[in-house]
Length: 146
Length: 472
Image (tube, rainbow over all chains, first blue to last red):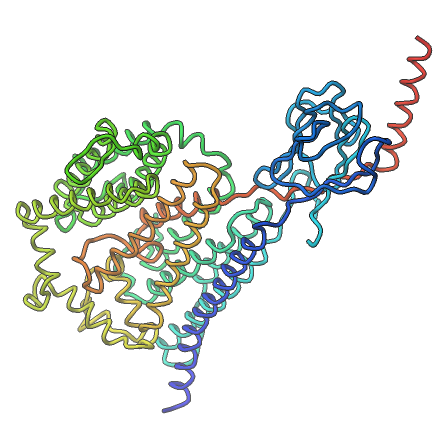
C-alpha cells in the first residue's frame, strides 16, 4: 500500500469521524438543553426584595419568592402581602410570561409605580426595577443561586 | 456591541461551534473527493464549497445581528445535509442536469449550489423576518384554496415525465408544486385543528367499536383522503400521496391524542391501497418490483437491484467519496441517482457509518422540531411545528426505506440532499418557519439604572411641583 492510498484512507476516515464529531457536538447541545429544562423546573423565577417600607409593612430587606403569577396587595390572600394603609386590598399583579416580567395595576386607589412613574395598563419590567405599592418599595431581583 | 441603534447582537456560540465543525468536516470530504479523482493528495478547486460555507456563515451572522433567541442547532444540521448534497453533486456526472443562463452553462453541481444558496438565504430570511403567525392562521382557508388551485393547475397543465404528472413549467424554470403543497397542507391542518380540536376530540358518532368525532368534522378528513387518492390517480405520484396522508394522520393524532382516528385512517389507507392495487397498473408495478426486484432485474426492477448492490458494495466504511460506481460502461447504473437514489449513492461511498450519520441528522431535525412544538406558546404554533417536522422526517423515512427495499419505492426527494430546486426551497421554508417558531424573544434587558443627571432632574421637578402647590 503506497503512501497516497494510505493518506487517502486517513482522509476518508477522518471525514466520517468529523461527521460523528458534529453529531456528538449536537448531542452535547441537546443534553444541555435537557439539563437546563430539568434545572428550571421548581426553581423560583425571581424574588421581590423590600427596599423601603413604613412601620406597618414588611421590614426592609424581607424578600418574597416569586411564582409565575404574583398578586400584590393588603389582603392576606395575596402572594405578596403589603401591610400599608396606602395600599389597596388587591393592588397589583406581577406576572412572568414567556421570558419576561409584566406588571399591571388592579385598579388600586393610589396607583402602582414602576421606577417612580405611575403605570397604566400592562408594562414590562426587568431585574433591578423598582415597584412601589402604597409607600412600600420593592425591587425585582433574580432568584438566589443563579 | 451597540454601534448601530436598534440592533442588539446576541452571540450564538453553539451555532458557531457546530458550523465550524461542519465546515471542517465538509472541507475534509472535499479533499477526499478531489484526491480520489485526481490520484494525488489535493484540495482540487473548492470554490463551490467555499461559496456554500460562506453563505452558511453569512446567515449565522444575520441571526447574530437579529439578536433573537432562536434555535441554534437547525441551521448547522441543515448545513451538513446540504454540504453532503453538494459533495455528491460535484462527484456525479455533471451532465445530469444543465441550465444555461445566456452564455453561462451550468452543470449539476453549480446548479445545486445555486438552489442551495437560495434555500439557505430563504431559510435565514424566514427565520428572522417571520415574527407573527397571524397571516398563516387567519387565512387558512385561503391557503387551502390556493393549494387545491395549485393541484388543479398541475392536473391540467402539468408535464408528464416518466409517467408521472408532477412538474409545472414556467418559461425556463420548471417546478414541482406538490413540494409547496405539503407546506400549505400543514398550515391549513394546523389552523383547522387548532380551532376545532375540542370538537373533534369529543366523540359523538359511533361506528362499531370506534368512537368518532361528529360527522361534520369528519368531512375535511375524508376530503383529505380523497385528495391523497386523487393525487395517486391523476398525478401517479405515490410518494406525495403517502406523505400527505401520513402527515395528516400524524397531525390529527397530535391534535386529538385519539388512537381511534389513527386506526380509522390506517384502515382507510389499506382500503384505498388495495383498491388502487387492483385498479391501476402503475401501482401494481411498484408493489411487484418491491416484492421481488430480482424477478425483472434487467428490466423494471433494475434500479432497486443496483441500489441494493450499491449498499452492499459500500460495506461498513464505504468505498470513499468518488470511488463508487455510479457509472458502468459510460451509462448510469441508477438513472435517478441524483434525485430518488441519493441515499444509495451516499451509502455506497460513505458506507453504513455515513448512512447512519445521515439518519442521525434527520433524527436531530425531528428532536429539534418536536421540542419547538412542545415549547410553543399556543395550539396553532405547536401543531404547525409538529406538522412541519413530520413532513421532513416522514419524507426522509419514506425515500430511504424505499431505497433499501423496505417499502415500495416512491419517487420523492430526500430533503436537503436530493437535486432539485422545488424540494430544496420547500424544505427551506419548513426549517425557516421552525426557526421562527422557536423564537423566544429578545433577551430580557436589565433595566437601565437612572443616571445621576436623571435623578437630579427628577429631584428638581418634584421640588418645583411642591413649590407650585404651596404657591397656589
